[in-house]
Amino acid sequence: MEIHELAAVAEARLGHGEPWLEFIRYPALSVGLYVLEPGEPDRQSPHTEDEIYYVVEGRGRITVGAEAQAVGPGSVVYVATAVPHHFHDITERLTLLVVFAPAEGSLA
Image 1 (cartoon, rainbow, N blue to C red):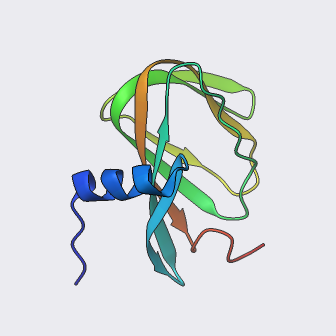
Image 2: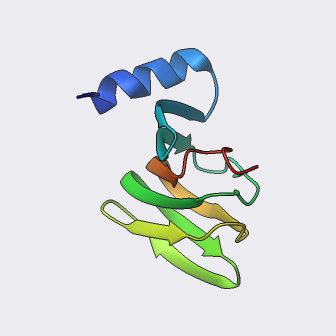
Image 3: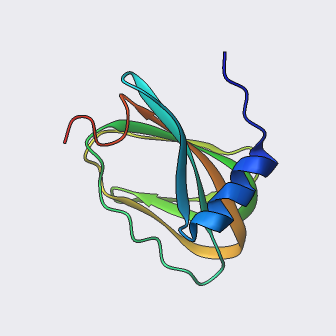
């Protein structure tokens, strides 16, 4: 069993100095914390794995393919493999729990 406290993960991410920090990794899945500040661009590219975003806190919009949608606390977004997507119009710090299946980059 693994238990992670999100506050500790968020603190570790700050020490890492990047918006993304992976904190669970197994061949079948990986989990990370992704944080974007208002006005900060989302620089990610399409991934080679399916992914789920869970919005822990904050507000903004996500565009997946040609479809845009507002997101806020409690929103869950599925993005299929290789589909272009990005967060934008962030009005409050966006804290996202991200799950990749299989693990991020494992199919690259």
